Length: 331
Ligand code: HEC
Ligand SMILES: [Cu+2]
Image (tube, rainbow, N blue to C red; front, side):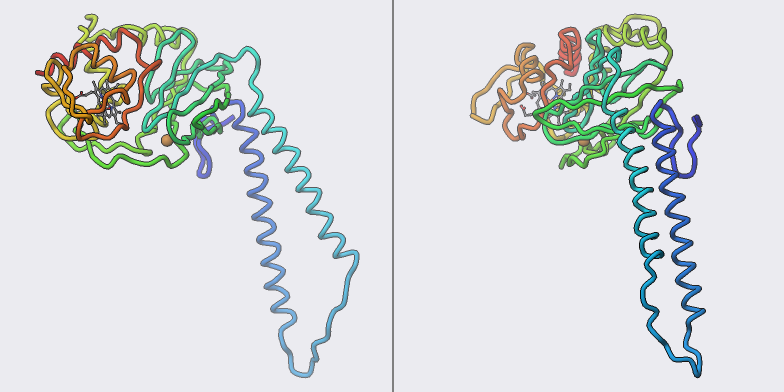
């Protein structure tokens, strides 16, 4: 198995990769050989049977053995390819019973991963090496597609149904995943950490898959379940909230400095009244903020579209409290 990328293929980081690559290269080299053979023969015949003075062209007639031969020969290759392809497909589809299950929820425009211990992560997937991992995919809105080239694994996340994929990583390290289904883009930019314009869309649905040993993986799950430590000190709720603002992708729609975006800015938001689309006014207190995060369509702020995804199930209570503390600090 080759962990390094080649000209045509990314490194082989899963148990599927060697098989997939073998079939890919088989088809590739067969195409090269047939291309050279057919074009070569055509060129040779053009030259050999070119018009010569004094020679009259005559029809060649049939050659039965030749015609049967070039009809039957490809059937063998196609049957072989079907056999290999189908065996590979079954392999990719049926996860071993002891696989660890991770929930993957896609939405415009980020990925939420939920681990067996209930911890969540956005756009960052950690998996243990040499263990089968089963992903159960769903989508909140449109069709997305989870694609890890180094694993040779891809599956659509379709609204209204679950789809499954699995893999077993064979190499420790960090590789990329992508959304492989074009799923739109925001019309307005948000402000980034340094005041720069940040657009979100299909292209923001990328991230890292981190393959690590069992101990590091377990420590990681433990760490993302509670507040992070900053320089050896456990973060305050507001500091944790500031981190979640980035890691949960809130920043792609909400600014914290008054700049316009797809959603209202969080500056001077908490503790102030806000006008909704139906003309009523509500106070932005902790209960309203919590509802806005868990059930964003319940009350829509005037002048904005109902496009915020729900974070029900992807942010736990402690994380929501941390976000509220952060919003309250933005006065
Ligand atoms: C895809 C864009 C988008 C993302 C991502 C997003 N929001 Fe929103 N959010 C909106 C929009 C648009 C509104 C205004 C419409 C409404 O009230 O639903 C809104 C409204 C809100 C409000 C109410 C604001 C007010 O002024 O009353 C809160 C609180 C909020 N979002 C929190 C969050 C948090 C926390 C996150 C990240 C975990 C987040 N949002 C991620 C688009 C987004
Ligand atoms: Cu997508």
